[in-house]
View 1: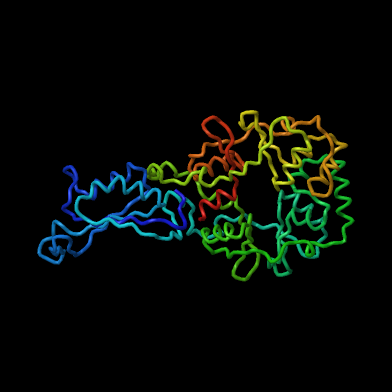
View 2: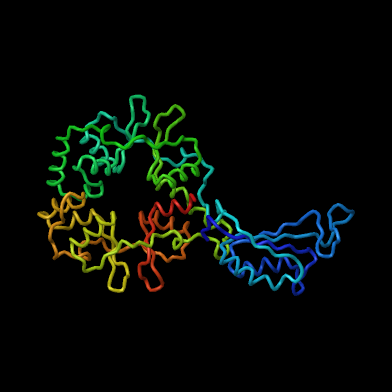
Length: 415
């Protein structure tokens, strides 16, 4: 259940001596609610009170009263509270039942928050951090990113304090000369050499094109705090600094998700049915899909118009066959069409006319698909084990109905 915002609170006032079919009523109510699929309810025992019969019951006597007041409470959506009332209303023959509006600001428990939120960031960050200076040449910074497989490079001053972050997106947006790292890795030697030559001619320095200020977090900050910052600000990574302000590492979404280790999963208490947040609740239903017979212009137009870096290729029934990344497009089109495609992906031109190439020919076959009922924690483990950034959600017929990426998974565990 994912519940933040307007909700209802159901409260039942009853006595400890109340029974239902030979059992204590409060236990029967809890069991009925559990079987009815409610996420949780709580019974508390009062120390004193009186009810309809005006008899005062209290613990402040020589022996404990056998009829102390009890209060059962549950908070859920209006629809589920109505369902709960229909289940337990007939069981409460004497007592009081109320329903009131509440506003949920946070909902979490041990099954929904597998993140070791109290641990310090330094335990999970990537280190040492590779960095550059604001006066470095664009080509030197790009070569450093390619050498280390980095999509973003911290920029630091002479004292090692972060000034900003240089990403492949910054280079593409502000110089018009560079595509994403995933594309560069798929280029042939001749195209890459020509590209580097163009970069060498740029007069701009790193400090002129980087994103500033840098988003930082202290190395002794809690992982939960860092995850919340990434979630609220939509950051893929945070620069980690010590108390002197010097860069000591980088914390990425992957690092946060990897902190949810499946090593001790078997030792945990099994969660009750319906208590886990599932991928179906956090998935993006705006499906970036194209049919398998779509041609290159159609694929490129869908990718650029939607701002997608990957598209799902589906068959006539909507079942996923594979994924097309912008790197796949560059690697698999005809060499003579490659430069035109690169300009189109950078939104600086029209795609080449290559209708003979279909989405099925351009895609990387196979996807990692999961059902909508899979718990988020299990989905994170599956994605990390297979080194996948995205999971395709499929229904019982195997048709694609949504997609989940690392940002969605981070949002689920950091909420």
